[in-house]
Length: 184
Image 1 (cartoon, one colour):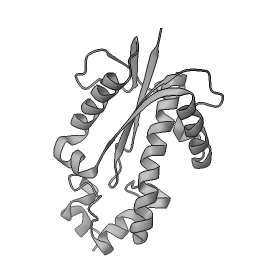
Image 2 (cartoon, rainbow, N blue to C red; image 1 turned 135 degrees about the horizontal axis):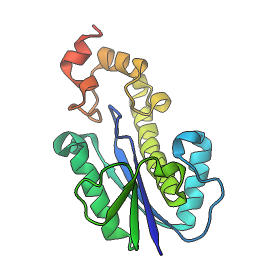
Image 3 (tube, rainbow, N blue to C red; image 1 turned 45 degrees about the horizontal axis):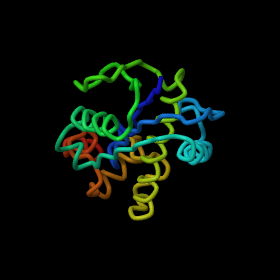
Image 4 (tube, rainbow, N blue to C red; image 1 turned 135 degrees about the vertical axis):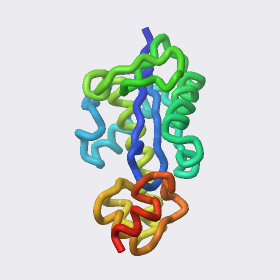
């Protein structure tokens, strides 16, 4: 049976893309686990190994796409893209909802127990983080390299001081004017 593991990263960020990845492993890979349990360096090392030893597809959704279609719409689109790009007998998504996409099984915390989902978690996280590292070079005052776009205190303070970039998710609470005004 060919299993395609699926996971996403960046769902809760205030800036940058959300990534959703699907992975079918061609051979076993040592060290796969939930991307949140790995150091950034180890995630990027494993991502290179996964890409060399797997079939994979990564869908990135920009802040604008997330604002326009919502997280659910983007996740639905990403799941459909993965099913179209990767042929498998079973698709397993780390979560509790398949967003109306037929043929997707769900399992909460699958990234901690299923190697294919752990691999997808690593590819999604490194794709999202790589995009934020590029934004950090362009928008140095926001500290994207430190918080990867999440709504931490330093990021909210930078939004308050410098405003929003074109890569911020304007539909998210931390990016709305009333939230920004709280820090003034």
